Length: 264
Image 1: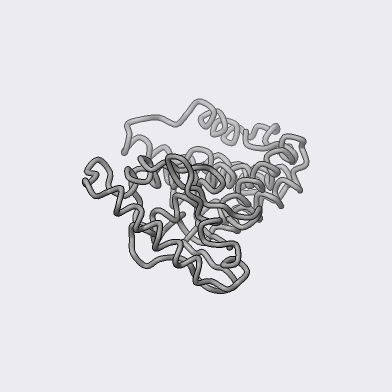
Image 2 (image 1 turned 90 degrees about the horizontal axis):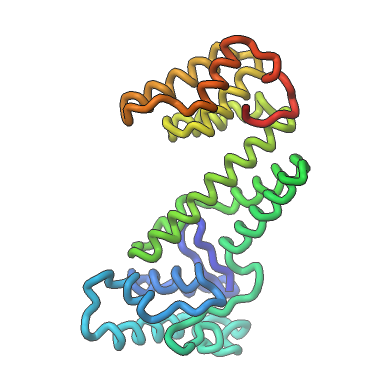
């Protein structure tokens, strides 16, 4: 079974979808997939589906949803059905576990690529880091679980994934800057700073890329846009490190011209 969570929820076995159409069973499948090979307790599943208003019939209703998921799995071709749906969606003491083969869930692949990319970056192998982090980011087909109603548990998981995505993107761009790909990343960073007008890391990366591409005055403009957004929205000045970068660009600090350096 191949499961994708980084975008719309999909789960296929040999081309046959096992994703239910009803909202609550979809939530259960998504949460089990995110915690694949780990037991998700009954209270956790109930909290995801019903929040604080858990009905008296919750236990029976949850078992019905699990049965619906198993029926979808059992209806797939012999490759998975032969194992038995109960061998895939397993009942454990106190909860349920989704059993999958390695490499079948895109979240797991994303997290492994990010870890490998981070290790390469820390080892100053920036070319490999950029490649691996780029592969990880390419797995995303939109916001995580974009078509799944999320309760308190899934909301936290989606937030965690989005934070990891942003961190991977920042690290990949920094690797590209260290490789001297300044002009190449400018268009991407322009879009990112427009989408995230108070994101200091993206602004710093754009300023550095513009400065090294011969557009120091554009780098100063980028700083002023971010400062304006921070002051008007939060009443805050940019961080000390960003102000230092602004001063370095303004004064023509030659240290900024070192092609192997990352963000100032």
